[in-house]
Image: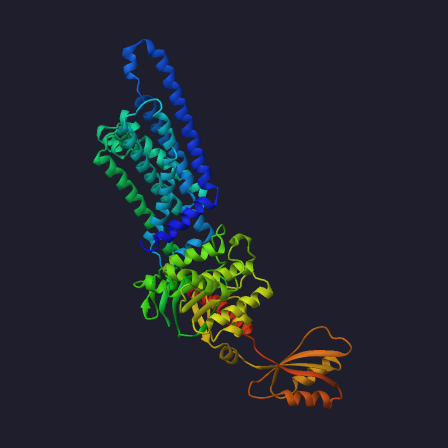
Length: 256
Length: 328
């Protein structure tokens, strides 16, 4: 991983020296903020309606009405915005030709990949931390259950990192950033909805596809359960696409 | 020291470089010449450990590029063609990134950056965005990044391409300055540049090396005849036939438009005979005025065109013969 820190710093600088980081983080927080406002408004509305029915009132809580839907909505927003973060990581360097210089510095391929991956992941973390004030505001209404919040955010982070590794791989395949973004979004969406095939695929195939589906593994996090198999799924997903990116760089060298 | 043996690189079925052999001694400045697509950039990419060869060996400072990639990369300063750079970076930020990537320790980084900035003359533009710099300054920044870490070997791919004559001269002077205590390989299309900077020339065409020597030896060895330029005042046809009659003269070709009775000829003669005195005697003896008589040197450009054209000429002959064999 020699040289990863140099690449990490450069990528981070690139995100913030250009409008990319501000545009992506800003859009994410704006849409997440909208959903938060909508969820809280909905909760106050149904609380008002249920104020005369104590049985119903017991079933209305912050976690189910605000936190879980918010985390689910944020996961969908990430599906859209992460390809915008990853599309330029390699495609731009290939188009401009800086990849040739970068790969002739005493920096290993894994250093380059991890530098770029960690910079994009830090941006993801900043994005998620940016929603922290929503949760602080929520304490004004009551104390939400910490389990689904911690689990949900960990799930969002792992899912986001998985999308970053996927996006980086597609960015390494092309010089065109739009093509990289389109493929990243398409592939991420496919992994998202794989478990929908359960209704019509054969039992074995449906079981396999369910295991590969991101949504399937995200569900347990949203319930506040930290399952080793789900964490392992995301870590393996990340490692697999980082490995494919390194193979893609190697292929580029042979073609270079 | 750089040693290349049997280097071959295929892109699919196309051999970009085919069985290339050469050696560059420490401290040499070698010019790498060849037409577009000859294999110069491919060879340089193999030497800089960017792209692996299909077969053959390349050793730099006695280390194989395949097995000692990291060590070699830290000993090489590379300026690729068109000097790709991060346009959104400021010059100092860019050089800091390069210094960090090259593993220069934090304590030495600032002084190293200042050193290369001074030596390439970019110390006044360190705070500017690279995209705001002129092409000449970008080229200097490209050289500066290559010089970070004080590498003993510099590999420069077309370092003066796209620059104006003043910038070309400035960059050439910079390269000459850096080359004093380094081994340099530079590819270029500007042939006088090679004569001015390089100790040796390697001419590559269609992936194979067609000549390798010092610029002066190359021009000497390719001098098939001694050439003189003669300007006289007299009737064109008569002067021409008189010159053609001089012993040792192989050909007399008129040059330019005749005017005021002035005629100009380029005379090719046998290299073993100095025909200049006979030429002057002939012109003066006939009562014409001899206005100018000067030897014309074979330029590196002539050698280059000669070698590249020879190769091109040979191919159709082989194809033709091959075609005949096939027809038989």
